[in-house]
Structure formats: C-alpha cells, structure tokens
Length: 362
Ligand code: KG4
Ligand code: ZN
Image 1 (cartoon, rainbow, N blue to C red):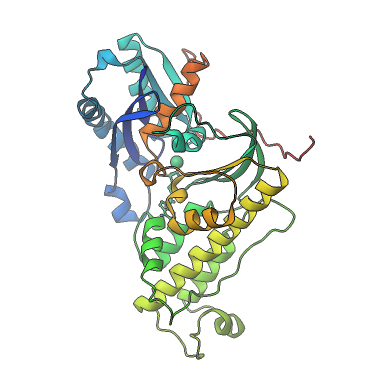
Image 2 (tube, rainbow, N blue to C red):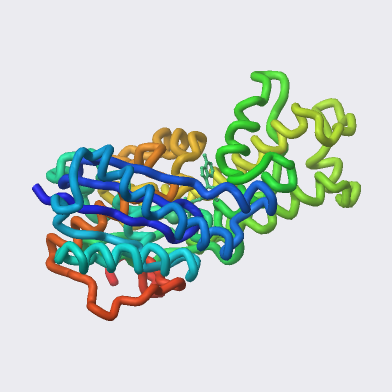
C-alpha cells in the first residue's frame, strides 16, 4: 500500500501527515497562534514566517510518529490553493524540494477538495459515498453548497454572498471578546447556557428564498449592534430583552451564552435548511459535510436529525485544516495518474467548482 505525505500550509496551520491508503499513520499540526493572540486573527506575513520555521520540524515529527524514513514515501501531496499566497508558497516549495530530492511524484491538491475528502480518512477504501452527493463546505474562507453527480466533479448550487460561515463565527467571537478562532469559542459559550430557564437570543436569519446562496453579514451585524448598544428601540425590544422584558447586562456570562447560542442557532438553521432542501431536490444518496465549521456539534447534530440518507462527517480533528486530508486527496490524484506539472504554481483564488448552477435534468 502506498505511503503518501500530505503537506498543508494554506492559512495559519502548518500540518504534515502520512497516510497508507486511507489509514492515517501520523498527523502533526502546529497552529501558529502568535500573531492571532495579538491581532485577533491571522496576519498573513506572520503566518508565512511561522510556516518557514515550523515546516521542517513538523515534517520530521510526522515521519517519527509514523515510524518511517523519507525513503519510504511514494508521493508528496501539497495544497496549492486556495489560501494565503505567502503561506501556500512555503508548503509548495517544501513539498517540491522533497519530491524532487526523493525522486517521487508531486501531487497538486485543491484545499477545498481535500476538505470534502476528510471524512474518508480511516474508512475502508471500498466505502465511497453513493452519488449524487450533496456537499456543504463550510470553512473560514468558504461556504459552498454543491452537488456531486460524477466522482470529484462539483456543481455549484450556492455560496455565501458575503461572509463565510467560519468568518462570521470568528467576527462574532471578536465582538463578544471570546478569542480566536471563534467557532470553538462560540460553541463553548453557547454550551454554557443554563438548561431550561434561559433561551438563546432570537437573531435574524437571511433565507434568500429560492436560492441556495447564503448571507451571514446580517446576523453578524445584529449581534454587533446589540452588543455595542446601537439598536433602534423596536429591534432592541425584539433581540436584547429577557423573557420578562428586562434589559440585559452586556458582559454578563448568561448574556454572552444567550448571544452565542442565538448566533450559532441562526447560522446552523440556514445551513441545515438549505442542505436538506438541496438533498431533496437533487435526490441525493448521501450528504458530505466538510471544512472547519463541520466541527460544530450543533451543526452535526442538526444534520443527523434532519437527514434520512447517509451523512459523511469528518472526525473533529480532520475538520480544521490538516495534512491528512491533503494526503487523502493526493492518494486519489495518484490513483488517477494526475501528477503535478513541473511548473506547478500556487493558486490563491482556486475554486472548488466552476461557477455553474445545476438543476435536475440538466
Ligand atoms: O477549514 P478551516 O480550518 O480553515 C479554512 O480553510 O478556512 O476553517 C476554519 C474555520 C474558522 O473560521 C473557525 O472559527 C471555524 O472553522 N470553526 C468552527 C468550529 N471549529 C472551527 N466554527 C464553528 N464551530 C466550531 N466548533
Ligand atoms: Zn480549510
């Protein structure tokens, strides 16, 4: 069975994994938190510099964990887009140098395709999802709903018109001063809501009816305006009062929990509603959830509850950016004989799919 190295540096995580087929032998990830703590987000220049410092040691550690030497590798897979240019370059240069030095093929991986394949890791290769499959890719940079009627070919149904779902989580967490990355922090804050007595705030949902598009900037702005006390009285009454009509204290842990839970529910509702609707319209045989936001337990539970077809969920540690999903995507490329061209360059704006709207019968 082939041993494939996966190298992921598209954003701020430096991650390297070794896979044998679908089996993960090692996954080592270093989250570069230095600039984030100070600036409340990813600073591209700092991320790129940290990748340069981290990539060698992370690679060495991955080989050690897998108990292999570099000579055992049969191919090197690397993310070439989408992502931050300075970060992508570090991974690509490292992977190309390694593949050339070892005399093994280099495989060019689309980061979004890798997210979609994350739920294959650890499964038997004989268990691919039945097609057509509806895929929801929700990350810090993307919110894409697609249908896959042919293997590895995504037809775009809808995407966000403004913030990506993960981006909205990150921005709302910043408003609520919960830290970065915002998704896990909001989930944790929402889970702290005392049972029974307190309800999540009712926040607006952008349904964008008759489309599979999303919009999360409205709900994000509603949280922000509520929090900084800029609501008009009617909105204030609707959103920022407790059951008895009393004004809520900002910074109160229960107020934070209610706001976090209200925001999470608003995002999850729309994501689940549109995914279920797409699965019905396209007579999907399976649904695949992917991307960092796929780690959200409320989203996972709601999809499980609403779908009666197989749902492919990545393990939590394979939701956020990681080298294992890159190696998994690389394994497929290798199987199809699709090796990277010698002049492979990064593509920061790479898409999951060509912009085309698919309808049944097309
Ligand atoms: O896929 P990813 O690691 O990076 C990109 O390709 O963008 O996704 C990162 C995003 C961040 O916005 C983070 O806040 C979000 O995924 N995220 C979550 C959770 N864990 C990570 N969002 C909601 N709930 C979570 N548990
Ligand atoms: Zn990602």
